[in-house]
Length: 240
Image (cartoon, rainbow, N blue to C red; front, top):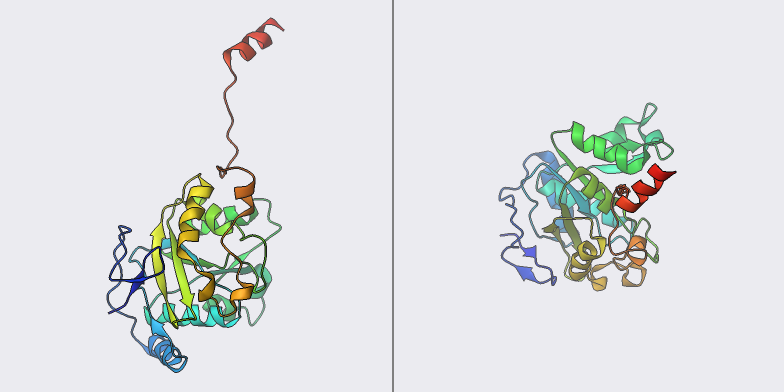
């Protein structure tokens, strides 16, 4: 029976996040290949993914290129197809089918609508999409996480799944689901309560969960709000 971790990072029979979890693992050659890789790597399959068709996945920790391989393997064990963001140029040409087969969603970083809007459109146009985002952005230590996973989840009105790779116990899986809102600090407090530095392959390279936006304001709306003019201001315009 798979384990799911709670917000203290301890093994638990279930997580009271209101989401049903898969009970049957994937079948076929891909699932068997993934199970073999995990077994040879000494990994234990942990928390099962939720049964809903759309959500954003926090892919952390990310301190080695092996993280992506192991995450893809434990997703395949459950028969889950993960999607990733990648440069549009990667999916072009005669070999472009390879990244697409691995779940890469092409994005144009210079597009006028922005990266977040492009991914939100992808969620709106698909019946199923599980998007994995490594918010650390790089395998080296940084001062902040990138906020794309949060902005996309808010913009698409979707929950966030906190996945994990615990190299200390060699367990990987899908953790708790959280509902993000405009209060970025409150949302990130729940993220911080889950992730532990010692889970990383290289703990000294792990970037603790902190967004630059948290240093600016406790509330970061996705779109700027237009406040109505106050009554005195309206009167002044009328007099002018």
